[in-house]
Image 1 (cartoon, rainbow, N blue to C red):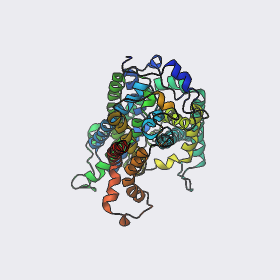
Image 2 (tube, rainbow, N blue to C red):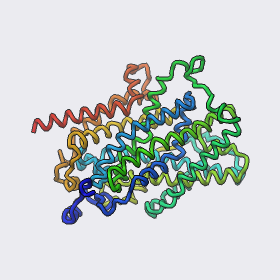
Image 3 (cartoon, rainbow, N blue to C red):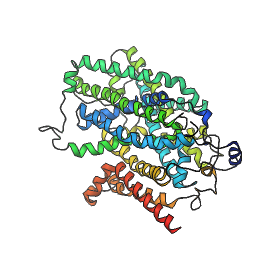
Image 4 (cartoon, rainbow, N blue to C red):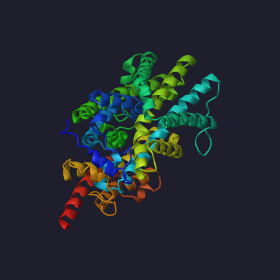
Length: 497
């Protein structure tokens, strides 16, 4: 055990406490704090993967034209791919007990680490907003049933009605209350969350089976990319950007996984726990989403990819209220665990002595509102091609740099105390590593034209088609380019010294 974990001595702890880079929340976790076993990580991923965005992810692929097995396979492949950087980046967290922003200091510099930390935090704010919107929408639908309110679409600039906004803010307030009380408050929610949402998913699956006349009609729905179908011959053009989106779904956690792996007892626990918990759960829950969404096409003649909208079709008020409350509790637990822990640490890293974990969580909540999450999930194409792929273009290069630095350049050896020293080994140039910053910019750059075309800020005819297509592979291109360039520049600067 001791050979696998590197710790600060008591003397080093005392010396570093005065450093502006040190705080209780960012300090390395010692051997006594390592209580997470393999099953802990498996349970974490089962709990986080069994969520409404996973359901919507699969459903959106059906809406895009895939049949059930194409959608499930795409999701499974995407999660197998993202599992690799997930396990690799978790290594430093387990070995040194450090959170993600401190891990970034080795490659980006003690001050430069704020750049990847804030980029990752902003993405988490978006996800926090999305989960909060889902919970608020469930509350709104419950109120509509109880008080017999007609649900009408918004016709204003913001794209949201007053009732929806009030319910959104109510659920947001519950999230803020949980943050105020501390992360330990959600342990009970996490314990009951996975069974609740899995039960809800299985009940929906049973309903779909009954209403659609068995799984035969559901699973026999043809792909729109098959010969004679509306999108014949366009499969690969949809598959690769969809796969990038699937990788992007957990690209956030593939970076900040040290925030969790720092509590692992051994490397074996984090590796096996993640491998068992992530891909299979994503495939299973996405299948539920695929099957139910396909059934809505048969039952209602239209594809309904949001489970909240599916539940509103139920006629029994008791069933609807119980289902929506279960959804709210499950969403609350996922939101705090997946979308607050990491950005709270990231924002705290900006000023360790002034911003606490709790304050960082409040900042996350405010930004989550400003990002208008209801627009991010307004339609399947926007969900995958604007939201998931766009942020994967930012996070892919960061992942490439971190892995290149830790595994190839430093060979898994860090000077732990120096990570907390303003004038230590990782200061570089006034706290910034220009090698990492240049590599990050270069990794993001190829995806910019395609992104601008996708959000309609540039006309597609004004950009070479090749540059537009690069956006569909944003995570892969950014990761590979930043990985190679970082090592080349590090080698060059070392030679100059």
